[in-house]
Every structure is written in C-alpha cells, then in structure tokens.
Image: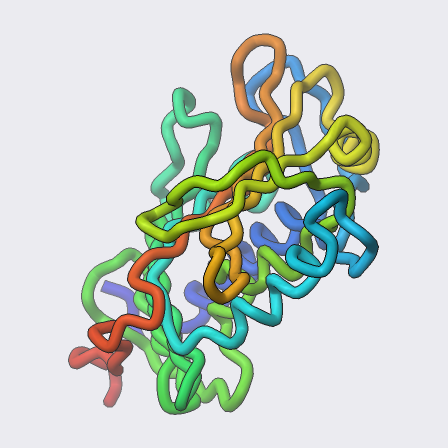
Amino acid sequence: MFGVAQRQGRGLLILTAVAALALSACGGGSQTPAPSATDVNPSASLPIATSSPIGNGGPILAGAADALASLTSYKFRMTQAGTESVNTLADLTRNAPSPSANGLVAFTGTVITKPNRAADVTTAGLHVIYVDSFDYMDVGNTGAFGQIQADSTSQSDPFTPAHVFSNIRMSGYSNVGSEPKNGVPSDHYQAGASALAELGSVSEVKGATWSADIWIAKDGGYPVSIALIATAKDGTIPYETTFDLTNINDAANKVTAPEHVVGA
C-alpha cells in the first residue's frame, strides 16, 4: 500500500499520462506506432473543430458540441488507441493492454453538467472522481482515494467525451441516413473522401484505411456516438477514438465523493 504522498504523486503522474492520451488522440499531442508495421509521425496531430459547412450536416454538426454541453448528465464509454500515452499509462499502472487489443484503453464514467459539475471516470489502474471542487484519485483501483483541491477544473476533464468531441474537425461529413444509436433516434454522419484523406494526411498514419462516423440525436442535436478509426493493412489499429453516450439526462445519474479517503 502506498503512503499518502506516494499515492498522490503517482496519481498525478498517471493523470498527466491519461490527459496526454486524450489530447494526443484528439489533436494535441504525439503519436507513436502501435505494434505493427504502420508508421506514425511523432509530430502529427489531428484536425481540431471548426464551424465550416459540413456537407448536408451544416450547422447541425457545428452546434453539436454546444448541444452536448447543454445536457444535464450522461454515462459514457470511450476507447482510445495508438498513442505514446497509452503505453505510458500501461507502464505506470502495470496493467498493459493485451497485444490483441492493439494497445486499446477503455474509459467509462458518468458526467454531471448541471446544476453542479461532477464526473466519475475509471480506466486501467485509475479511478478519478470530481465533485464539490475536489478531485479524488484511486491509483490501482484499490478503493482508497487521495484528495486534491480542484476548484473549477478537474483532472478528469481531458478524458471525457466533451473534450474529445471539441477537438474533432467537423467539415466534410454527410448525412447518410437515420437510425437509432444507443437507443436514441439519430442522424448518421459519415466522413467523405476529402475528410478521410485529411485525417490520414494530418495524422500521417501511413498505409491505413480511415473511417469516421458521428451519430447526432434528432432531438437535442448532441453527439450520441463517434468512431474515428485507422486500420492498417495487417489488420492492427494504429489509431482509434470512440465514445458512446447512454442514460442521457437520467435523474438516476449520480456522482458522490468516495467513502474511503486516505488521510481524511
């Protein structure tokens, strides 16, 4: 068992790694090769959000980030793969993803936006709860949390769907039909050839086939699901960012401070 200082110090290191993971996967950090022959330029970054016209999606996609922020709460599952931070996170937590998963890291959690912001996020070897202006961190998912003053900014922010979606360029998508997604009636938007070529060019994931899909709720205009994936010729996944929202505005969504706080 780590002491309080050791636990909080290691927790901050891991939080830094996870934050870098989310940023690099969405356009703010570095990328390194997954275990395959695919080359990734370490200086590459994905395009960021824009309000440019979006095929026949237009202002619908451009306003989706604001619509997401207007929700009162939701649960989510998010996956990311193909960054140096994935490996760093695995090393720090001693819980490396299996090679068959292509270094995939999964995040699950609950986000509350109103009336008071809160979040509960779990990933491999780390559990972070933000509530009442405090971050509570459990390194190793042991059930014991360290407490850090967070005020209005939480260490969990970079690896929530809102952060991910705000860093995706919306241009070049077209509405390819309507269908339910995660139980929500949605419009399915898909990246066209120019948008996919831009993803490959800017990220410089070479020799991979890209796909990019976004599902927007018909009622509310928020993103229900996204999937940005690069598949190499050998079938490995050098890059992946996905998320799925469920339990939208569910009154049962709750985030509470942990019972076992080290040193409290």
